[in-house]
Image (cartoon, rainbow, N blue to C red; front, side):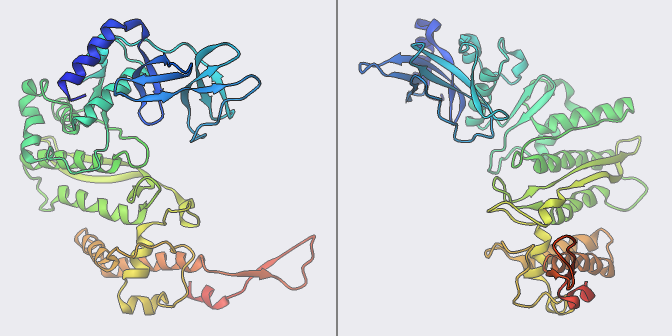
Length: 412
């Protein structure tokens, strides 16, 4: 798309054969501009604007379409139906486990395809396919943020981006409201609008961050807090000498240690949801923060999917705890813990645990409280290694079990 000659040829092709170009379903890119072509061998092919030539699967008489690669996700595909002698689009319905014939393929609106939109709400056609195409096009140009009306769509770049500096905070801050309208979409713009409305109108504001695992929710939250923290510093300190902004930022790694885990999509996936409230002074300086709601994926403690892991804190304790902790908590034995089997041999758990303890101490956790917290973590690990056996004298109509290793119960 970045090649001018290729783009020019693409646009000329659409102008010449506009009636034949549609949004075609694509296994990797979901929707792409393409057309259907019957080759010399009588085989239907899907030609995309990127130059791909994809065979269209045939459905013979009394034959069902092949199941999709990921049957749990809804998707669209085209098939040549021999009985109807037509190429038709079908939608996969995961709940029913079958394909259903859908409406005709959507024609391409050239203006939508040609334009480069910072806000998808400005497009003539806001259906799924052109929105998907615009987001992909922007993403390939490192434009990871896009407005959809007043909603900001963020796509995880999976790399460091030099767009979160103090200079960027100044660009999007309320002091430059007039110029902000012409700036590119950015997470700081969302934070700036919320902060400005809070200070100017003295009304509570809310920012909702949602998305799938690995989408970047945790990082987006950190960036919002980074912006608010800087605005607070510029607004002036409160009477308290505590650095509340820094304490809020330090709380994130602690929450991640006990609530993040490796999943199939993300090595540091947040397996919890939270509602965080931040209090401000009239002048706009942060004065306090608290978490009102915390919802943890508790089932992960006892079972994980293949290739996934338990919460980071379990591995920090079993692989990185000081010798005296291991002796006191009896976690230095060669017996593996059922709840913490899949560790990462390359991780420096000792350093990670010490960094976690340092952050907890900075936030006012006493050494006694820190040890009590990890006592609970160790108790959960030992619970996972309890063995049960049938109690003597039970029968098949009324079975009773008892704990085999009473010594571990005493330890817990």
